[in-house]
Amino acid sequence: MAEETATSADEEYSQAAQSYIRAVGARLRVVRNQLGLSLQAVEATSNQEFKASVLGAYERGERAVSVSRLQRLAKLYSVSVDQLLPHESDATRWWMSKDAEAPGSSGGAPPERPAAQPWQNSDTVTIDLTRLRDVSGPERDLIRRFVSMIQVQRQDFNGQLITIRSSDVRAIACLFGMTPDAMGRRLDELSLRINT
Image 1: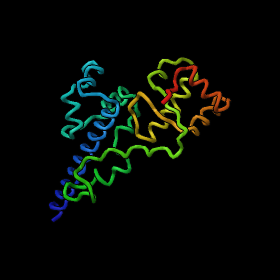
Image 2: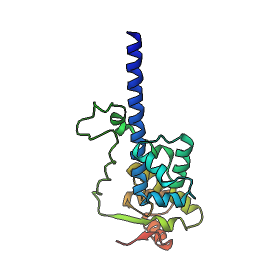
Image 3: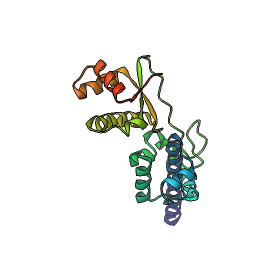
Image 4: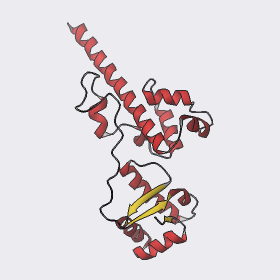
């Protein structure tokens, strides 16, 4: 009897581990797609460290990714490691066995996180993140950290543009000790603001 219980526990653990591997893989795919990268582009960008076939196997949950490789992939994607892992909202999905799916679910992989809600306030500013990389000095570092925080909250890692609220511009202005209007002008001087 004890042997049957141990075997059952081992099987449950194995199923949970496989579900988690699939959830990590699905998360890797979501982030890669948000960055607009193909498997081949990741292989080329990483100087063949991450072969397309191996990364594809990670994303399909056919192969477990090691912590050290996950760290290197996070660095390549310019995101924190925790952004490549399933989050609390996904937890109810990955720990369940295949037969005990959450209501409305269609498998062991977590869904893409919902897109950010449209702003209630139409007064928004779009920042060109590719130009931000070329800006030098302390302004760049402070704005990048602030924008990075917003990207993490939204789960938005496309890396090219980000639209922020006027209240975010006010917060950035406070960090620089200037008015929001002056901050808007400074964003224009740095060619960071995109007129939409």
